[in-house]
Figure: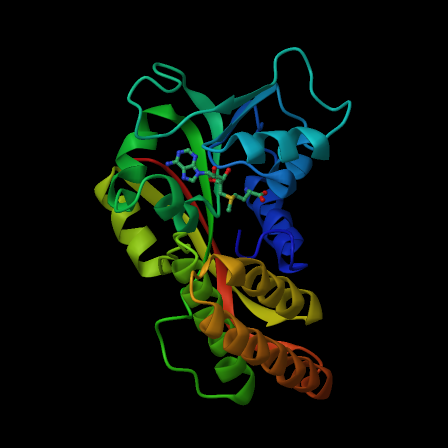
Amino acid sequence: MELMGMRKKKSSLFKYIEQLNADRHWGRVLDAGTGAASLRWLTGLSTTSWTAVTASDHMAGQSREAIPGDMREQDRIVVGNWTDDQLLSGQVFDTVLLDYLIGAIDGFAPYWQEMVFDRLRPHVGGRLYVTGLEPYVPFPAITDAGKMVREIGCLRDACLLMAGERPYREFPIQWVLRKMSLAGFTIIEAKHFPIVFRERFINAQLDMCRDRLQRFGAPALSDAMLDHVESLRERALALCARENGLAHGADYVVAAEPA
Ligand SMILES: C[S@@+](CC[C@H](N)C(=O)[O-])C[C@H]1O[C@@H](n2cnc3c(N)ncnc32)[C@H](O)[C@@H]1O
């Protein structure tokens, strides 16, 4: 919902994972929170088979559409929730990917994030890769670009809440490292990737706000919010053009193996 497919950064994260994987076999791969980007990437790798899990029928459809003709007999897209103990019960994979899964959990299993590494641990036979976004909404920003990105994020989350939806909740890398260690993983690498947000991010986030306005149930507030959304868009696009992008925050990649 929030950022997927909107940043070129994504491909540098996948490139980095390929670098970390080096000449290890990908083998049987589990994409534990799938979507168009991770599945497109996976289908380009030399895997024995892949299983892609999503909690959303809609995301399953989008993912399938993203890889026309690339699904082999042994590959599967599974709609299910990791809170279900029976999901992929007893199945072990050589490589497991959690690509922006943690931030999305609040939408499907609120307050369950702390369980995710314990739940997935038995499925990891070889290597685990985690990508995520450092949370930026709750923290004050210093630069003009940072303040702008944060203002957009705050407005987006406010609009989602007002429309009765649950925004994503991102977790910092320190939390991920701690929880992975507690769940019995040895950390191999952890790296940040600074983000430069572009026009596409600004428009996608503010379009998301616009889409939610009619569900506020308060017409006067919706009208005022529409003005606010469009004036923020104008300011953000102008700053983005002046600074050649809005540099703020970071994505991260963590690689680990069962201890
Ligand atoms: C942000 S999207 C992932 C992005 C994706 N890797 C891509 O390439 O765009 C998060 C994914 O995690 C899934 N997800 C979130 N919480 C889940 C849960 N509790 N059980 C199973 N899947 C979950 C969502 O359904 C969605 O498919």
